[in-house]
Image (cartoon, rainbow, N blue to C red; front, side, top):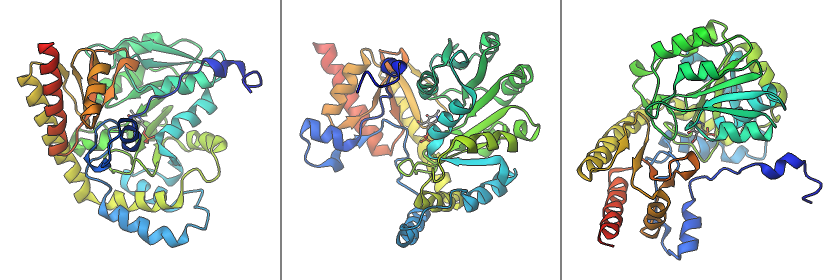
Length: 369
Ligand SMILES: Cc1ncc(COP(=O)(O)O)c(C=O)c1O
């Protein structure tokens, strides 16, 4: 069928996700998958909020029915919490889907996006699928260089993506920097502020980005239930934007883009503040544990505000593979132009320890080789 496909499809790259536990176990012949630690996709090691699990169980007998395609109750709960109007929210199949919807709405051959060279790779994959160009702007100290990104904007630019905090670097720009940036973004461009990890920060440290929506700026704030809310498997994310901006996304979405169980679970998770607090505590303590160990091991790392950390181990893919053989899955970073790093998700204390033990052993073997 190759010759029937659109010619540009052949040159598209594919996303390399964190490897599923089952796949690694099958490949390496591990019998007990419980022993495999996956700290590769910035998931929440606490498991889902118990309230979300209850909501899923409660909703199971109704799964013969299509979901509410308008996600009314979840949008209403989000609108109350965020103090925006329901019509300023769109729910998606993970925030990844919303990135794709933005591509459908704003990109075409000849247009481009601006992003940081080490920001979330999905932006450029979707841009390529829309036959548009990606302008990659080098980061400074592993952080978005917003001034350089502004300078990179051309008349053909349609979207500027800012991941804040950024994956895979774990760095963030502050509210004042964003204000200066937003004030200078030209009118022919929309800004996607991807805040997949923002709820990991205490509310006092989260920049107020919804004010840009209230001010009627060309902005989409993207959030997800996959990280802080522990529901990556269900696929729920959302966008906050002006009514008009949301209306554009509705035009290109599938009628039932988010499943009914996911809608119920997300609404329950949103109410579970104790769970969010436990998550923040696990991440705070885990970051200290990992950074402390890296200091002792004299490994360079990028200080992170998110639930993962980028560490320079030298020949990262080799370390990733050796860790896999020790039943620990992390993420190699060559795809991000960082072949000497791996990215490790902050897990439970014992998961972090399994990773550190493995890493110490691998580096010691290498030192002795
Ligand atoms: C910066 C960033 N944005 C968006 C996503 C997508 O999240 P989801 O599609 O699970 O909502 C991720 C997931 O890793 C991410 O790191």
